[in-house]
Length: 105
Image 1 (cartoon, rainbow, N blue to C red):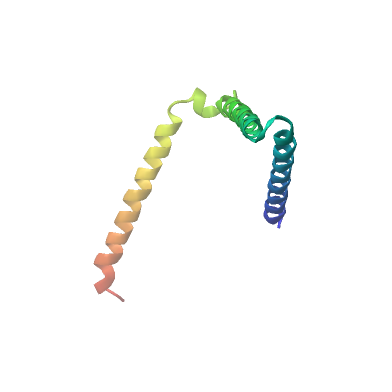
Image 2 (tube, rainbow, N blue to C red):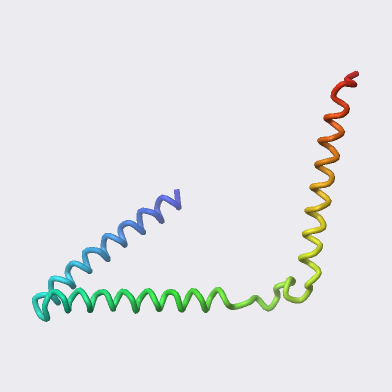
């Protein structure tokens, strides 16, 4: 249910931005001309999107100082070893089931 509310909020926000864009285009078009109005609105959206990308890059590039993977490089190898062990165990289990299929009690 919260996902649907978030989706509805996003759609309503997009509709609002669309109407504000049309209003800005009509207002600026009457004042400075349609070509200049489209250019100004496009540049405004371009600067807004660049700001969002800059903020997202800043948030994603920060590292948690308490992150154990930064302090212990061996943690990644342990995960790979565990995955290899699981694969070997699964293969042996399936092979044993296949070979023992004819010897039912």
